[in-house]
Length: 175
Image (tube, rainbow, N blue to C red; front, top):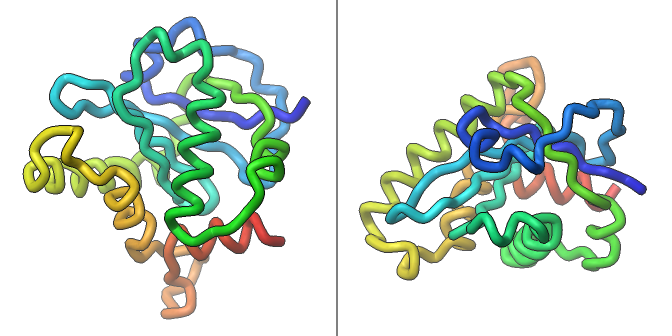
């Protein structure tokens, strides 16, 4: 069975110790690895999960420890609904087969993705002030704002090296 690697931050690792595996031998699918961190909105745990290749963000809100047993399905459902919201059309069966199961691993110290996530969390802090509580936050819209922010892919400094996460994820899923 195909597995998707999700490397957790130290903060998130402490919260989900029972999910963490040390087996790093699994191969990543076409989506590559993901990085996850935790942030709080009104003392409710939310996860920011970012794809390492495309910098595509997914936000899981109000995650309780009782939901950790079916976190695979929560992630797939949230990712699928965010893809639809962002205009990336794919079948759920196709996405399910690409992702397979989830392997939660300790941090991989990917400074590029961690820096990108920290920048995204700053933007989310700004928007938290605007919307107040979690129920008033349009999470899909806020995630879409993060995913349409310009990102740099490539080595050069050409304008063509700049894109956004939605375009990159669309290219990756529709190869």
